[in-house]
Image 1: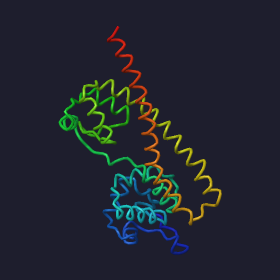
Image 2: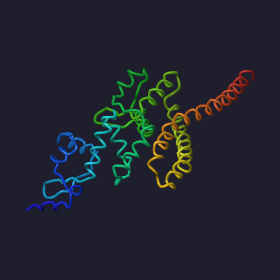
Image 3: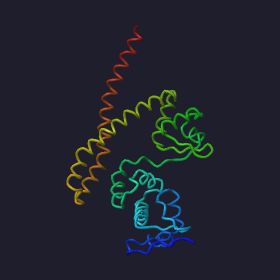
Length: 253
């Protein structure tokens, strides 16, 4: 015999069946089950064969509905929620979403190696696919299909290959670049945490300061990108000048 759910202590403590949950948040049961299958909704408390949902599930679905209304795709919502703290409250999730949104990568795309080769004019052999998987640029799906996690990065890289740079050389170079970019990213994030965020937390996270925090996060990305690009141009010019001088010296020698 199944165990009945406990009597609710009040409306906030009430547990809901999936039908009641769907009605509470204005979604269909089919959508609720679909979101749960994608991992957007924590598992319910099971009593026999019946699942019961609480306040956290309601808050999570309301957040998903809000993000969909704002134009987020399910894939982007999934990536946002997966990186959030497991026991985060709805308020924490909202803050997490706002802080993370400016930095989310483009939407992944799915393609076969043949489709990527046709798009870029660069042959995509199994060895190249394996290295791209190792770098985290693509993921393997069923059959030959691939999920391209950052389409812009992959297309840019393959365009460089199209200019005559061997794919193996570019991939090795990109692996080193990724390490440097990771260090640069860590530097900027730590700068933000040690200054703006620490002051916000020390002040008790006042709600009236939240908009300023989010504005800082949103504006930090383009400012940081400009600073990195400016430094890159300066260093690239110096490196090119040195390489050209050495190459001309070989010709004259």
